[in-house]
Image (cartoon, helix red, strand yellow):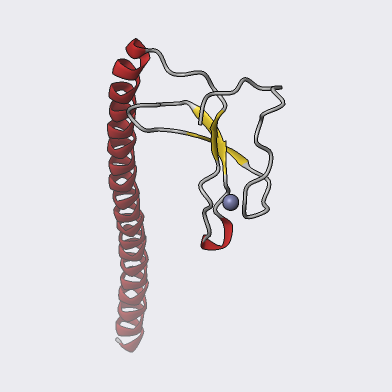
Length: 125
Ligand SMILES: [Zn+2]
């Protein structure tokens, strides 16, 4: 179907399934970032009603945008990996703090027991 400018009387508003069409964005290499309206594909049905909202993408943008998207996706993937590593690191640090606290408590308990033992031994003399 040909591109139709917004406000045109030939704008598709409903699909063959009877649903109101939805506007989505294409991320294909041929039409990166170009919006289209079409069947929402609800309930697993898709009638194929389709109409471009935006004019065709210029050749230069078609060359550049997929590369930019690819780099963006790579950076997002890397960021997620770093976040997961950070999360694991924080979990380990949390355990370390707990162990240190337990060590301190054990030291205090041992000290008190030694004092009590010494006092008991001294009082027996
Ligand atoms: Zn439909």
